[in-house]
Image (tube, rainbow, N blue to C red; front, side, top):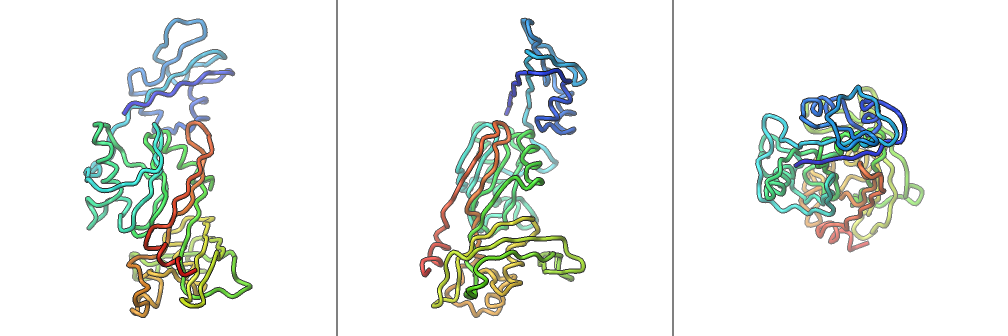
Length: 312
């Protein structure tokens, strides 16, 4: 895929400084320097554009054109696989996808050709476009819902910067065990998280070795009959398994979570178990990496969680 960006210059600067303000990283600029006509300038009053070096000056009225050639990156790109993928939104720069339960995001040992990356590689194989999987925000294999995919290196660079600055806002819905006391219907969990000793997967709250982790929650409804609650959750940090660990730490583990829910591990959950943790990436809000427009998306609960929530 070839993506061409055009910029109208309104004040004096260098090409390098201007492109830095637009989110171009050192890696992208290094690639552009090696690309014929990757960076071109049409000076005010000139008939045509010329291939230019990043150190050159820009002046008001100039037009800067950048051409990004998308190429497959990495020694082992994901193998295209014809898997269902629900694309909620798509343009030249980004995708917003509603990930299904049971689908890992990236290939790993034991999951080489059944991931979202494989599905997206197939999605772009159809028009024979080069594809590099740039999934900006990850979800656990069994967590459903919205996530962002960048279609080119510049969009990925801008969105990753926004992610680090906490400018991408995601809201989750979870079904948790046990009813909340009236005074605890909303709150902030501020508890550091670390890898549990002896486990490659499991995390735990650890005030000595853990990394800072902060989770905000609010109970939307709950059922005294089933002793479960529907909870809205937002993260201020992005630690592995953060929601699952934090909710379990306050006595409200996620229904279906076989790693952090004692009832699920012991088999006491019975027919209420849904075969996965009841967690869904419900709402997603961010600024478009190229236009700056506010992008807001909301995806209803999947069927298995709707069935659980029907009792509320």
